[in-house]
Each structure stands twice: as structure tokens, then as C-alpha cells.
Length: 385
Image (cartoon, helix red, strand yellow):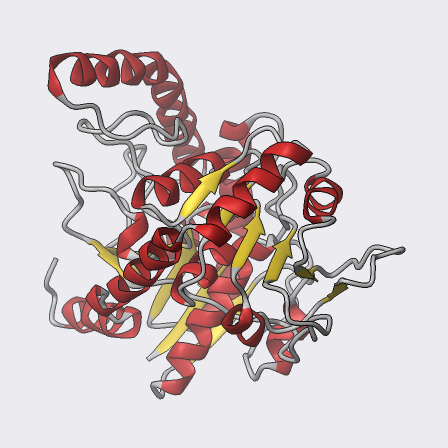
């Protein structure tokens, strides 16, 4: 099976796309990654076919509707000749790379949506995604959720209108039929029950990839290792790294800072650099991070609890889900005393590590993304819906 995987340039989206390509290749399929140049060379070095796509820029704009739909429709038209030349059997399109799904529709190809995080579709049984709130219980809780959903309904309707106009503008039906399947690349521990879970959605576990396979060496010593991972997202919490280093000073811990931009002037008990995080996490006692999905999922898979210092985007939502599961403490806004207290709580209370270990076990419940995609392809070959 030949598969075109379309992803935007942000690390949190292109890394899972590369990981999925590697899974396809290992299973004997032929994946082709279509993304902007930021991480393309690293993907090629990992053995993935990734032809240059200089035009494929999907960075957010102030008008989210224009970015998600109108700009995506323009990119879809540019993507069509590329897909025609590749002649894939299936297209997998990142949840923010709407152009991939639109281009597949224009060519009559089946397409699958990749969500590199929990399912963020609105639900009639949940508070709005991004609120960080648990599902309300009792009459008051359900009323609260209904009121909050009403507040967001206008924005959702406007998004649907912009989507319909953009689709019609390139010759697609105004109503979006959606993908034939959704790959929800998260741990079941980070999902929440909903009464309207889509039948085409499959939780497939985190799709993780390190562009720099060599691990970062932690500083010497016997103190607990704290891994600090500043957010790669543009909306990450400001000054999280400097605040965390100040908070750890004097705690008799070691700190390893996982970053592509190591800071200068580190204390002797800290080291910094890029590199594979798996070995580092096996040694860690706690991770301090922005609660972006990639690092949060890695930490939980390693059974390591988290001090979450969330910024914008979905980090607040994810941080609160991990906190409710018991594996994280949320600090917002970042402050030295608050981060210090949170780290000490996690180090001294074994229930946080136990909850992280329980979260890791839920990976046994996931579906295989390659199998899901093959089933979709085979169903289409047999003419099934």
C-alpha cells in the first residue's frame, strides 16, 4: 500500500507524522511524507521518502478560520499534482493540515485524519475542549457544560461557514463528509469518555519520534534527576526554563534540559542539549514541561510524573487531564515558589509515580494505526463505505 502522509511544519505535528511513516515502512508499506522543509532532512535521514514541498506552509494566522480552511483550500489545489504524481492508495492528513484531506477528495482518494493528541472534536457531553474542565456531574455540572458549549457555538458555526465557502470555492461539496477514519495518537489515560465517540475514530497510542537519536548526558551526581523540556510550541509558557532553574536551585537535584537551543551559564548541577529523550526519561524522577502532547506522552509512557507549566493551545487541556489522572501537578502562571513546591510534592509523594505507571499500562488498549489504514484501503477496494 502506498500512503501519502501530509503534515504541517510544527514539531508537534510533523514528528508524529514521521513516526507513522516509520510504522508503515516497518510493516512493508510505502509511505511518502509531504511536509515543509523544517524537519524534512531529518526525516530523510531516518529513511523516509520526503520530496521537497517548499510551498507547504501551515503556520497559524490570526484568523483561525482563514488558516484552517481558506488557506488550506488554496494549498489543496497545489497539492493535487503532487498526489497525482505519487499515485497513493491512501492519504493520511494531519488534523491541522486540512489541505491533505481536501486534495484527496478532489482526486477521489480515501483519506484518514491523524490527530497527534486526544480527540478534540466538540461533544454534546463534554465542556468545550481547551477549558481544562472535567465533564460536569449532577444537574449543576451538566448545566455548566451546556452554558459553556453555548458560548462556543457561535464560533463553531462561523468555522463551519468558512469551511463550506472554502470547499465550494475549489469545487468540493460544501458539506464536509470527513475522513474515513481518525487515528487518535494518544494514551487512553489522556482521553475522556464521551457519549458521541465517532465510530471511525481509533485510539492508536502516541506516535513518537526523536530527530536526534543520541541522548543527552545528565550531569553527574546522586540527586534525583529532573528533566526540563521547554515547549517547542509558539504558545509555550514564557520564561518557563529560567523559572524552573531558579526553583530547583538548592534542592540537591540534577537537571537535564532537553532543548534544541541550549542556554548559556548553566549551574554545575544542570546540563542541556538536544538528543533522544528515552534514556533520559528512564533515569528521571520528574519531568517539568509545558504539557505539550509529545513530551507528556513520553513521560507517562516511561512512568515518570510531571510538573506541567502549560502555555497556550491545548497545553492547558492536557495538563489538567494528566492532573485529574493523578500523574501531574499543574503550575500556572509559572512562579519560582510554585514550581519548587510542585517538584518537591512530586518527588516526595509516590502516588504521582504510581499514577504515571498506571497511565503507561493503558497503551496495551490501543489499536494499530497501520492495521486501521489497511482496513480502510481494503474496504474501499471492495466498495464498502
